Length: 506
Image (cartoon, one colour):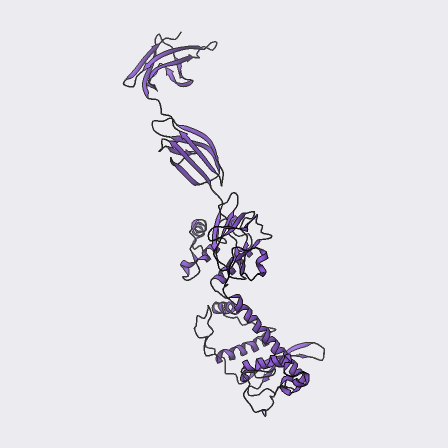
């Protein structure tokens, strides 16, 4: 299990916060890019996972091509069989299964070297405990009296030799009557006869081993052989030859596709497809869609048709790219971080680039004169100036800049993902302060104001901290409901001592 734990609480905690291990750390030798592919499906938030299975499938197929990993249905079957032994089931169809197992078992015993796969790793196949078979079996389809077909098991004599096939027209002398050596059938068979081992030739009805013992033409007819007209034999032989030619042509095509290109161009347009230029296809399908971008060469030059977008999951973009040369892909989408990658591609190959774009963060830059001021946003300290943060979440709040000996600066700002807020501020030096007591002669009281800000109440118990120099204060007594009493007092404040200023309420 990916998230271990003996208790439900431990498992839940691991699911929420445990670092997800790299695949290569668990099984050394795996391609490093597999971790990049697995990061999407293993994302904790469902919204961060691939929206379609096809996205992951494309990435895995691309990785298998790049890493020369080939996995056939037989490899999968062997992998499953190695960890899940076959369970014996009774019922209809077991007769056919038994026949297949006996044939596979006999063939397995005849092998001298195990087939090397990712599962066997060159180890010999397991030893079977089946009894030695003294005969081979086969299945034929017969039509019953009721007009329905059914499979029947038959025995085949392993010592029997196939009946001689009917000669082709090219062998019987009829070729000349049909136009001589120029007959296409003759030329085709001469080519095959010159390249195939006659001792490995098989015919319908031959032994199950696929080999026909050499004979002088007087060998006995097999027990299960039936008489076949020369016309049917000739027609069957022709179809076999045609099938071999098709397979040979397909093999040549695969070999040709795997060869590296010899000529290249820079991101050619569709009109170059027929000029002998080696091209590959790049399919671009980022998540989320609606992105734009470009494809450039190694030097960063964008081709005339290299720009693309907006993208759509319904119809991924497919662009032609020069094979055998490095190309760069840049993808942008508002509200998300830019994505950059570089790849190479083979001729006739399709490379799928389907990254999951990361949500963009908000950025804040603060510069002050002088430097070294502390910057806080919504009560959280972000650092000192000059400040540059690119990892902030969307938010609205108050920005506060403070520095000893300078007035505090405050401003309301809004941080938006993918955008940068820049603030440049020259801090004002704070006024020097002195201590002051205000006394009232004759009794009474009054609230003390300086430049509209209330500082306290006179007579003062604790000294007030006020700017040095001559300052004018306003006092207000609101004890009389019918009328407020207001008056002013001017005091001289020095920084060397605690000053006292006396006034009288009117």
